[in-house]
Length: 406
Image (cartoon, rainbow, N blue to C red):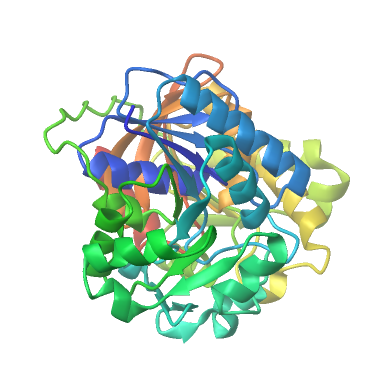
Protein backbone atom coordinates (compact mmCIF):
# COMPACT_ATOMS: atom_id res chain seq x y z
CA UNK A 1 0.00 0.00 0.00
CA UNK A 2 1.61 3.26 -1.12
CA UNK A 3 -0.61 5.57 0.90
CA UNK A 4 -2.80 5.19 3.96
CA UNK A 5 -4.93 8.24 4.63
CA UNK A 6 -7.00 9.48 7.55
CA UNK A 7 -9.86 11.81 6.57
CA UNK A 8 -11.79 13.85 9.12
CA UNK A 9 -15.10 13.48 7.33
CA UNK A 10 -16.71 11.31 4.67
CA UNK A 11 -16.84 13.84 1.85
CA UNK A 12 -13.17 14.60 2.45
CA UNK A 13 -12.42 10.89 2.23
CA UNK A 14 -14.03 10.48 -1.19
CA UNK A 15 -12.48 13.79 -2.27
CA UNK A 16 -9.01 12.47 -1.47
CA UNK A 17 -9.75 9.02 -2.85
CA UNK A 18 -10.83 10.57 -6.14
CA UNK A 19 -7.47 12.35 -6.46
CA UNK A 20 -5.58 9.13 -5.70
CA UNK A 21 -7.68 7.14 -8.17
CA UNK A 22 -7.00 9.75 -10.85
CA UNK A 23 -3.28 9.10 -10.26
CA UNK A 24 -3.85 5.46 -11.21
CA UNK A 25 -3.94 4.03 -7.69
CA UNK A 26 -6.43 1.30 -6.83
CA UNK A 27 -8.21 3.15 -4.05
CA UNK A 28 -10.84 2.26 -1.48
CA UNK A 29 -12.55 4.22 1.28
CA UNK A 30 -13.00 2.34 4.54
CA UNK A 31 -15.73 3.56 6.84
CA UNK A 32 -14.68 4.07 10.45
CA UNK A 33 -13.28 1.02 12.21
CA UNK A 34 -14.04 -1.52 9.48
CA UNK A 35 -11.26 -3.77 8.18
CA UNK A 36 -8.56 -2.19 6.02
CA UNK A 37 -8.05 -4.13 2.76
CA UNK A 38 -4.51 -5.08 1.82
CA UNK A 39 -5.06 -5.45 -1.93
CA UNK A 40 -5.28 -1.74 -2.78
CA UNK A 41 -2.56 0.80 -3.58
CA UNK A 42 -4.22 3.41 -1.38
CA UNK A 43 -6.80 3.24 1.38
CA UNK A 44 -8.57 6.20 2.95
CA UNK A 45 -10.19 5.72 6.35
CA UNK A 46 -13.25 7.96 6.60
CA UNK A 47 -13.88 9.28 10.09
CA UNK A 48 -16.54 11.58 11.46
CA UNK A 49 -14.04 13.51 13.54
CA UNK A 50 -14.00 17.08 12.20
CA UNK A 51 -16.33 18.40 14.89
CA UNK A 52 -16.03 15.51 17.36
CA UNK A 53 -14.61 16.14 20.85
CA UNK A 54 -10.83 16.44 20.63
CA UNK A 55 -10.12 13.27 22.62
CA UNK A 56 -12.41 11.23 20.40
CA UNK A 57 -10.95 12.71 17.20
CA UNK A 58 -7.43 11.88 18.36
CA UNK A 59 -8.31 8.35 19.47
CA UNK A 60 -10.13 7.57 16.22
CA UNK A 61 -7.32 9.00 14.11
CA UNK A 62 -4.66 7.05 16.00
CA UNK A 63 -6.65 3.85 15.60
CA UNK A 64 -6.98 4.48 11.86
CA UNK A 65 -3.26 5.23 11.55
CA UNK A 66 -2.30 2.06 13.36
CA UNK A 67 -4.60 -0.08 11.23
CA UNK A 68 -3.27 1.47 8.02
CA UNK A 69 0.31 0.93 9.15
CA UNK A 70 -0.42 -2.67 10.08
CA UNK A 71 -1.93 -3.18 6.61
CA UNK A 72 1.34 -2.07 5.02
CA UNK A 73 0.92 1.68 4.35
CA UNK A 74 4.30 3.14 3.41
CA UNK A 75 3.22 6.74 4.01
CA UNK A 76 0.40 8.37 5.97
CA UNK A 77 -1.72 11.30 4.84
CA UNK A 78 -3.83 13.38 7.24
CA UNK A 79 -6.67 14.91 5.23
CA UNK A 80 -8.61 17.97 6.40
CA UNK A 81 -10.85 20.42 4.58
CA UNK A 82 -9.35 22.87 2.11
CA UNK A 83 -10.91 25.66 4.19
CA UNK A 84 -9.13 24.29 7.30
CA UNK A 85 -12.42 23.85 9.15
CA UNK A 86 -11.68 23.78 12.87
CA UNK A 87 -11.83 25.82 16.07
CA UNK A 88 -9.17 27.12 18.46
CA UNK A 89 -9.56 23.89 20.44
CA UNK A 90 -8.95 21.59 17.45
CA UNK A 91 -9.13 19.20 15.83
CA UNK A 92 -6.43 19.55 13.19
CA UNK A 93 -3.53 20.28 15.55
CA UNK A 94 -4.21 17.55 18.12
CA UNK A 95 -4.72 14.94 15.39
CA UNK A 96 -1.49 15.94 13.63
CA UNK A 97 0.38 15.81 16.94
CA UNK A 98 -0.87 12.29 17.60
CA UNK A 99 -0.24 10.90 14.10
CA UNK A 100 3.22 12.47 13.82
CA UNK A 101 4.22 10.98 17.17
CA UNK A 102 2.82 7.55 16.27
CA UNK A 103 4.75 7.55 12.98
CA UNK A 104 8.01 8.59 14.64
CA UNK A 105 8.23 11.76 12.54
CA UNK A 106 9.19 15.23 13.73
CA UNK A 107 7.62 17.41 11.02
CA UNK A 108 5.13 17.58 8.23
CA UNK A 109 3.82 20.05 5.70
CA UNK A 110 0.44 21.76 5.98
CA UNK A 111 -1.07 22.28 2.50
CA UNK A 112 -4.84 22.88 2.34
CA UNK A 113 -4.66 24.63 -1.07
CA UNK A 114 -7.09 23.38 -3.72
CA UNK A 115 -6.67 25.77 -6.69
CA UNK A 116 -9.33 24.09 -8.85
CA UNK A 117 -11.89 24.94 -6.18
CA UNK A 118 -10.54 28.41 -5.48
CA UNK A 119 -8.62 27.61 -2.25
CA UNK A 120 -5.15 29.18 -2.30
CA UNK A 121 -2.49 30.11 0.24
CA UNK A 122 -0.15 33.08 -0.09
CA UNK A 123 2.00 34.51 2.70
CA UNK A 124 0.50 31.90 4.97
CA UNK A 125 -3.08 33.17 4.54
CA UNK A 126 -5.87 31.11 3.02
CA UNK A 127 -8.23 32.63 0.47
CA UNK A 128 -11.44 31.29 -1.06
CA UNK A 129 -11.99 32.42 -4.65
CA UNK A 130 -9.75 35.41 -4.05
CA UNK A 131 -11.38 36.42 -0.76
CA UNK A 132 -9.57 35.94 2.53
CA UNK A 133 -11.08 33.05 4.49
CA UNK A 134 -12.30 35.30 7.30
CA UNK A 135 -14.33 37.34 4.80
CA UNK A 136 -15.68 34.35 2.86
CA UNK A 137 -18.93 32.48 3.42
CA UNK A 138 -17.00 30.17 5.77
CA UNK A 139 -17.13 32.94 8.37
CA UNK A 140 -20.79 31.98 8.85
CA UNK A 141 -20.34 28.21 9.01
CA UNK A 142 -22.71 27.02 11.76
CA UNK A 143 -20.25 24.51 13.28
CA UNK A 144 -16.77 25.80 12.43
CA UNK A 145 -16.99 29.55 11.70
CA UNK A 146 -13.64 30.57 10.23
CA UNK A 147 -12.83 34.08 11.47
CA UNK A 148 -9.08 34.02 10.74
CA UNK A 149 -7.23 33.71 7.44
CA UNK A 150 -3.63 33.19 8.47
CA UNK A 151 -3.22 29.46 8.96
CA UNK A 152 -0.54 29.90 11.60
CA UNK A 153 -3.03 31.81 13.74
CA UNK A 154 -5.55 28.98 13.39
CA UNK A 155 -3.16 26.10 13.96
CA UNK A 156 -0.91 27.50 16.71
CA UNK A 157 -3.61 27.57 19.44
CA UNK A 158 -4.30 23.88 18.73
CA UNK A 159 -0.77 22.52 19.28
CA UNK A 160 2.38 22.95 21.34
CA UNK A 161 4.50 22.26 18.25
CA UNK A 162 6.23 25.08 16.40
CA UNK A 163 4.41 26.39 13.32
CA UNK A 164 6.47 27.83 10.47
CA UNK A 165 5.65 29.29 7.05
CA UNK A 166 7.31 28.61 3.70
CA UNK A 167 6.50 31.32 1.19
CA UNK A 168 5.69 31.12 -2.49
CA UNK A 169 9.10 32.34 -3.63
CA UNK A 170 10.70 29.26 -2.05
CA UNK A 171 8.16 26.96 -3.68
CA UNK A 172 8.77 28.55 -7.07
CA UNK A 173 12.52 28.17 -6.68
CA UNK A 174 11.88 24.47 -7.31
CA UNK A 175 11.71 21.12 -5.55
CA UNK A 176 15.38 21.04 -4.51
CA UNK A 177 15.17 24.45 -2.81
CA UNK A 178 11.87 23.59 -1.17
CA UNK A 179 13.16 20.27 0.15
CA UNK A 180 16.12 22.06 1.67
CA UNK A 181 13.76 24.52 3.38
CA UNK A 182 11.66 21.63 4.72
CA UNK A 183 14.68 19.76 6.05
CA UNK A 184 16.41 22.82 7.52
CA UNK A 185 13.35 24.01 9.43
CA UNK A 186 13.12 23.14 13.14
CA UNK A 187 10.74 20.29 14.02
CA UNK A 188 7.07 21.20 13.73
CA UNK A 189 4.52 22.12 11.11
CA UNK A 190 5.41 23.83 7.85
CA UNK A 191 2.62 25.83 6.21
CA UNK A 192 3.53 25.92 2.53
CA UNK A 193 2.11 28.52 0.12
CA UNK A 194 0.46 27.26 -3.07
CA UNK A 195 -1.67 29.10 -5.61
CA UNK A 196 -1.55 26.77 -8.61
CA UNK A 197 -1.43 23.08 -9.43
CA UNK A 198 2.16 23.67 -10.53
CA UNK A 199 2.98 24.82 -7.01
CA UNK A 200 1.39 21.65 -5.61
CA UNK A 201 3.44 19.50 -7.98
CA UNK A 202 6.64 21.09 -6.63
CA UNK A 203 5.50 20.54 -3.04
CA UNK A 204 4.68 16.89 -3.74
CA UNK A 205 8.11 16.33 -5.28
CA UNK A 206 9.92 18.09 -2.44
CA UNK A 207 8.11 16.19 0.29
CA UNK A 208 8.28 12.64 -1.08
CA UNK A 209 10.71 11.71 1.70
CA UNK A 210 8.30 12.65 4.49
CA UNK A 211 6.64 9.76 6.31
CA UNK A 212 3.53 11.87 7.06
CA UNK A 213 1.84 14.41 4.81
CA UNK A 214 -1.09 16.67 5.62
CA UNK A 215 -3.36 18.71 3.44
CA UNK A 216 -6.48 18.89 1.36
CA UNK A 217 -7.11 16.55 -1.53
CA UNK A 218 -5.42 18.59 -4.25
CA UNK A 219 -1.89 17.81 -3.08
CA UNK A 220 -2.63 14.10 -3.53
CA UNK A 221 -3.26 14.64 -7.23
CA UNK A 222 0.50 15.19 -7.63
CA UNK A 223 1.89 12.36 -5.51
CA UNK A 224 4.12 9.73 -7.09
CA UNK A 225 1.93 6.85 -8.21
CA UNK A 226 1.63 4.28 -11.00
CA UNK A 227 -0.29 5.63 -13.96
CA UNK A 228 -1.48 2.41 -15.57
CA UNK A 229 -3.68 0.70 -12.98
CA UNK A 230 -6.87 -0.80 -14.37
CA UNK A 231 -10.04 1.04 -13.41
CA UNK A 232 -12.77 -1.26 -12.17
CA UNK A 233 -16.17 -0.97 -13.81
CA UNK A 234 -18.73 0.92 -11.76
CA UNK A 235 -21.49 -1.43 -10.57
CA UNK A 236 -24.93 -1.25 -12.12
CA UNK A 237 -27.59 0.13 -9.79
CA UNK A 238 -31.32 0.75 -10.05
CA UNK A 239 -32.92 4.02 -11.16
CA UNK A 240 -34.34 5.42 -7.91
CA UNK A 241 -32.82 8.85 -7.15
CA UNK A 242 -32.68 11.14 -4.14
CA UNK A 243 -30.79 14.27 -3.10
CA UNK A 244 -30.40 15.08 0.58
CA UNK A 245 -28.74 18.28 1.83
CA UNK A 246 -27.62 18.88 5.38
CA UNK A 247 -25.18 21.59 4.35
CA UNK A 248 -26.01 25.27 4.76
CA UNK A 249 -23.16 26.46 2.54
CA UNK A 250 -23.68 29.08 -0.15
CA UNK A 251 -22.69 26.57 -2.86
CA UNK A 252 -25.22 23.98 -1.71
CA UNK A 253 -27.99 26.58 -1.42
CA UNK A 254 -27.25 27.63 -5.00
CA UNK A 255 -27.34 23.98 -6.13
CA UNK A 256 -30.71 23.50 -4.45
CA UNK A 257 -32.13 26.60 -6.14
CA UNK A 258 -30.78 25.48 -9.52
CA UNK A 259 -32.22 21.98 -9.15
CA UNK A 260 -35.65 23.33 -8.20
CA UNK A 261 -35.55 25.69 -11.19
CA UNK A 262 -34.81 22.67 -13.38
CA UNK A 263 -37.76 20.68 -12.06
CA UNK A 264 -36.57 18.92 -8.91
CA UNK A 265 -39.31 18.40 -6.32
CA UNK A 266 -38.09 19.81 -3.02
CA UNK A 267 -39.12 19.55 0.59
CA UNK A 268 -37.51 20.98 3.70
CA UNK A 269 -37.05 19.06 6.91
CA UNK A 270 -39.34 20.38 9.63
CA UNK A 271 -36.60 21.33 12.09
CA UNK A 272 -38.91 21.45 15.10
CA UNK A 273 -40.34 18.02 14.27
CA UNK A 274 -36.84 16.63 13.66
CA UNK A 275 -35.88 17.63 17.19
CA UNK A 276 -39.10 16.76 19.02
CA UNK A 277 -40.61 13.87 17.05
CA UNK A 278 -37.93 12.47 14.71
CA UNK A 279 -39.73 9.18 14.00
CA UNK A 280 -42.78 11.06 12.77
CA UNK A 281 -40.68 13.34 10.56
CA UNK A 282 -38.78 10.37 9.11
CA UNK A 283 -42.06 8.62 8.29
CA UNK A 284 -43.51 11.80 6.75
CA UNK A 285 -40.48 12.36 4.51
CA UNK A 286 -40.37 8.72 3.38
CA UNK A 287 -44.11 8.78 2.58
CA UNK A 288 -43.68 12.03 0.62
CA UNK A 289 -40.84 10.51 -1.36
CA UNK A 290 -42.89 7.40 -2.21
CA UNK A 291 -45.83 9.53 -3.34
CA UNK A 292 -43.82 11.06 -6.18
CA UNK A 293 -43.79 9.65 -9.73
CA UNK A 294 -40.74 7.52 -10.65
CA UNK A 295 -39.49 10.21 -13.03
CA UNK A 296 -39.32 12.85 -10.28
CA UNK A 297 -36.04 14.06 -8.78
CA UNK A 298 -36.76 14.38 -5.03
CA UNK A 299 -34.65 16.76 -2.96
CA UNK A 300 -34.79 17.02 0.82
CA UNK A 301 -32.90 19.84 2.51
CA UNK A 302 -32.40 21.25 5.98
CA UNK A 303 -32.11 24.88 4.86
CA UNK A 304 -32.64 26.85 1.69
CA UNK A 305 -31.26 30.20 2.84
CA UNK A 306 -28.83 31.37 5.50
CA UNK A 307 -31.64 32.73 7.66
CA UNK A 308 -32.86 29.15 8.18
CA UNK A 309 -29.76 28.31 10.26
CA UNK A 310 -30.66 28.00 13.93
CA UNK A 311 -28.65 29.53 16.75
CA UNK A 312 -28.52 26.10 18.38
CA UNK A 313 -26.61 24.86 15.34
CA UNK A 314 -25.05 21.77 16.94
CA UNK A 315 -28.32 20.43 18.33
CA UNK A 316 -30.18 21.18 15.11
CA UNK A 317 -27.44 19.61 12.98
CA UNK A 318 -27.55 16.39 15.02
CA UNK A 319 -31.33 16.15 14.64
CA UNK A 320 -31.19 16.83 10.90
CA UNK A 321 -28.40 14.30 10.35
CA UNK A 322 -30.41 11.65 12.16
CA UNK A 323 -33.57 12.33 10.17
CA UNK A 324 -31.89 12.56 6.76
CA UNK A 325 -29.74 9.47 7.29
CA UNK A 326 -32.69 7.43 8.56
CA UNK A 327 -34.81 8.43 5.56
CA UNK A 328 -32.05 7.40 3.14
CA UNK A 329 -31.46 4.11 4.95
CA UNK A 330 -35.14 3.23 4.90
CA UNK A 331 -35.67 4.09 1.24
CA UNK A 332 -32.54 2.21 0.14
CA UNK A 333 -33.43 -0.87 2.19
CA UNK A 334 -36.91 -1.03 0.64
CA UNK A 335 -35.55 -0.60 -2.90
CA UNK A 336 -37.18 2.78 -3.49
CA UNK A 337 -33.80 4.51 -3.90
CA UNK A 338 -30.56 3.27 -5.46
CA UNK A 339 -28.61 6.48 -6.16
CA UNK A 340 -28.14 9.25 -3.61
CA UNK A 341 -26.39 12.60 -3.66
CA UNK A 342 -25.56 13.82 -0.15
CA UNK A 343 -24.42 17.41 0.45
CA UNK A 344 -22.51 18.12 3.64
CA UNK A 345 -19.67 16.31 5.37
CA UNK A 346 -21.44 15.56 8.64
CA UNK A 347 -24.61 14.47 6.84
CA UNK A 348 -22.58 12.24 4.52
CA UNK A 349 -21.02 10.52 7.50
CA UNK A 350 -24.42 9.96 9.11
CA UNK A 351 -25.88 8.56 5.87
CA UNK A 352 -23.05 6.09 5.26
CA UNK A 353 -23.17 4.90 8.85
CA UNK A 354 -26.95 4.48 8.75
CA UNK A 355 -26.64 2.44 5.55
CA UNK A 356 -24.10 0.16 7.20
CA UNK A 357 -21.62 0.52 4.33
CA UNK A 358 -18.13 -0.65 5.32
CA UNK A 359 -16.13 0.10 2.16
CA UNK A 360 -16.65 2.40 -0.80
CA UNK A 361 -15.15 1.85 -4.24
CA UNK A 362 -14.44 5.11 -6.02
CA UNK A 363 -16.15 5.76 -9.35
CA UNK A 364 -16.44 8.54 -11.95
CA UNK A 365 -15.30 12.03 -11.04
CA UNK A 366 -17.95 14.73 -11.44
CA UNK A 367 -15.92 17.81 -10.50
CA UNK A 368 -12.77 18.55 -8.53
CA UNK A 369 -13.35 16.87 -5.18
CA UNK A 370 -16.67 15.27 -6.17
CA UNK A 371 -17.22 11.72 -7.40
CA UNK A 372 -19.58 8.77 -7.48
CA UNK A 373 -18.80 5.89 -5.15
CA UNK A 374 -20.48 2.55 -4.57
CA UNK A 375 -20.88 0.28 -1.58
CA UNK A 376 -22.91 -2.59 -0.20
CA UNK A 377 -25.31 -1.79 2.61
CA UNK A 378 -25.90 -3.85 5.73
CA UNK A 379 -29.06 -5.21 4.07
CA UNK A 380 -27.10 -6.39 1.02
CA UNK A 381 -28.18 -3.67 -1.42
CA UNK A 382 -25.68 -1.94 -3.68
CA UNK A 383 -26.03 1.83 -3.48
CA UNK A 384 -24.35 4.57 -5.51
CA UNK A 385 -23.40 7.66 -3.51
CA UNK A 386 -22.08 11.14 -4.13
CA UNK A 387 -20.73 12.41 -0.82
CA UNK A 388 -20.23 16.09 -1.52
CA UNK A 389 -18.61 18.75 0.59
CA UNK A 390 -21.12 21.56 0.98
CA UNK A 391 -18.85 23.99 -0.85
CA UNK A 392 -17.95 21.81 -3.83
CA UNK A 393 -19.48 21.04 -7.21
CA UNK A 394 -20.97 22.98 -10.11
CA UNK A 395 -24.27 24.75 -9.61
CA UNK A 396 -26.09 22.19 -11.79
CA UNK A 397 -24.59 19.16 -10.01
CA UNK A 398 -27.87 17.86 -8.57
CA UNK A 399 -29.43 17.50 -12.01
CA UNK A 400 -26.42 16.49 -14.13
CA UNK A 401 -24.57 14.01 -11.88
CA UNK A 402 -26.84 11.11 -12.82
CA UNK A 403 -25.56 11.09 -16.40
CA UNK A 404 -22.15 9.77 -15.30
CA UNK A 405 -23.62 6.41 -14.21
CA UNK A 406 -26.57 6.22 -16.59
